[in-house]
Length: 346
Image: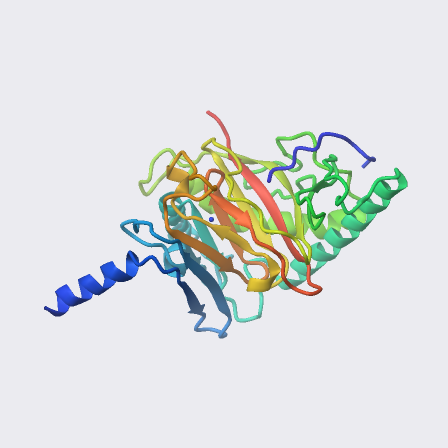
């Protein structure tokens, strides 16, 4: 997932006994089944959904993860309040499952990141892909990537069918006086083409909002200890950009973004997600395991698919198994913004 462009095309996952027996049989049945979990906000009725797919013939972990177990709902006034309580809870969830979904409880139809910021960023993503495809075509190449997937510094084709694109961006998110992520501090030099001023005006608020919401969680995850006064470790952004999943895309194979500890993926959907749009599937807990099964499956039987609202956030460990699913919609592209946060060394 992190952009690693290789060329340049331009500038810029009894009753008690009876119940226990029933649960055991259900959990060890060879029949696959699907469960839908729904969490409803008391404030405005907004719904966040998540699908849990039961793998066949496998043994349950001690605690089967669900929407409730991997989600943290932030208070409606989270921006004004001390983040200690929700950031510590999110960090504990992340450390246990290798993933946490950050859900908004606002009453204004917004996710954690305001709707208009997401909408503006979504428009920038589409215009940027269009421009890059124009440049590729001018070189006499197939911009869809169907003939041959390409990996340029400004855009990467992630699907043999040419329906999934990664658009690296310079990082513009520096929360004022936070000391967290200096302006433009991206680990990779290959950050895509330079942004026009109009693009920067739409992308900077997105990046700043991401840092403001996840920064306290990063501090809690990467503190040297978990007491009430943790020693904060700074972090920086190793990569950033947009991921576009167009109609007709194929599901990805299960994969980890890397083997190393100290990296966290941050996904922000720029539209409301549903099952048809090819959301990200996660296998919670796989950040603690080292090997894959024969077909890329892991021994944890739970696969969760968070169906987040626009502007809510999914954080997962770089080592957590995940994959993007096929976009089966007729005409809707699933766009998300991503950032890869890296723990700063001593």
